[in-house]
Amino acid sequence: MASATFTPEEWQALAAYGLTQADAEGESGFRVNAEQLVNDESCVAVLEQIKPALGAPNLKVAASLTIKRLAFLVLAPTLYALSRFDKGLDVSLAQCEFDYALKDRIWQSKMPLKRIDVTPLCGDRADWRIQVLTQAFAEHLSPVVETMHRLTRSPKRILWENVAVRVFSIYERRVLPGLEGEQKALAQADYAWLLSDGASEVFGLDTNPIAEFDSAFTELESAAEPVRVRRTCCYYYRATEPQEFCSNCPLPLRLKRNKKA
Image (spheres, rainbow, N blue to C red):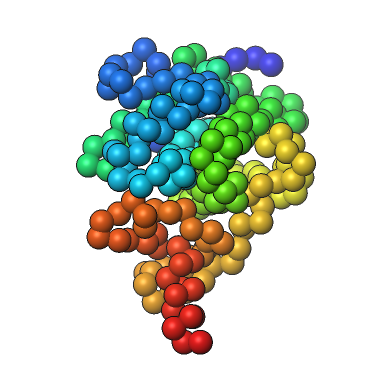
């Protein structure tokens, strides 16, 4: 398949989501080759560095919150380029570095790429989409989820819902707004397919691990707009002082129901 490049305007849009070139300067001591996240020793070492910077009490919480950030860095530029520009971005582990700097418990991290490999849509969209998304999931996020689950015992359902909520927000808040006509229809089709059972192969798994989290929106007193309430808690509240919950966290609702019971 022929290679391509991003226009300056396209690159600027993707850079806003943390995409950068690996030769750009990064904060010393807070950047590793992404492949190290599937190496037991180096993965634990990274999480041990992240844990106090996040205020996480243990590696299980650190792993959950790290997957949320990693999923955004991998998927935001990938899905935006795929559905907005009809260009595929290779974000497989071998291509990426993970910059995990934090300041005042806020991520400053980026996703440096060692080589900017761009594959334009050519021929069948379904086949091309599978190729692009396989690099993002089966060749990056799936093995990292498996490694962090095994090393920290952070439940897979929590880690995969962390990925799912990133997919939801990337499409609903970033990719789809402003699109019209055929381009919007294609982007909506990309999104719907990624949440379908038929997309399981791009995860390298027997089933699609994010499909079950595609639930209806719910109106909450605590939220200005309807939200898709999570099935699991990501442990964010365990890394905050004073204690805070995500706007779509299921725990406050459960506590409220228990008080009424």
